[in-house]
Amino acid sequence: MPTLLEGHGQRTENFLLAMREQKSIPQHVLEQDAEEKCHLGRWLKGDGSLRFGEQSEFLQILQRHEKIHHLARQAKLALDNGDVANALYLGSVLECENNKMIKELRNLVYDEESALSCSHGTQH
Image 1 (tube, one colour):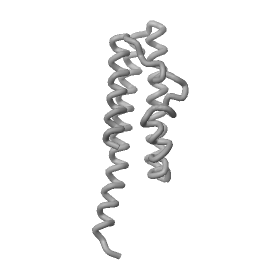
Image 2 (tube, rainbow, N blue to C red; image 1 turned 30 degrees about the horizontal axis):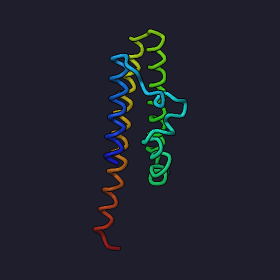
Image 3 (cartoon, helix red, strand yellow; image 1 turned 135 degrees about the vertical axis):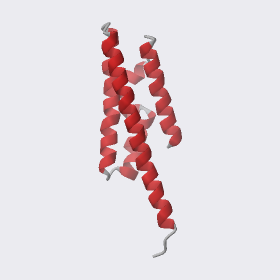
Image 4 (cartoon, one colour; image 1 turned 90 degrees about the vertical axis):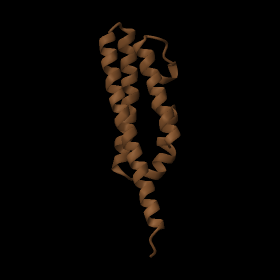
């Protein structure tokens, strides 16, 4: 999980940097179903869903992840239309949403690991 989150964070940073510098953004980031194909999206729909799918916090994380990809597409569209100020604003919203999502994911995973380690130390 830490490696997955670090990779996602780095890809987000690269996207924001490319957008700010108005450099080429990889097309796969902007595809309609990018949230299904990215590394984190595949984990969320697979192992993440199996481990945390019953928890309300997990649904919020899924929704936030989709929102992040939607914001990326909106920011790129604004940039393509010459609306740099709006593109940068959307990029800052994306960054904020991404930071929240990573924190929520870490909390979810940490809570599970903490509960598991506590249950191993008790006898029934």
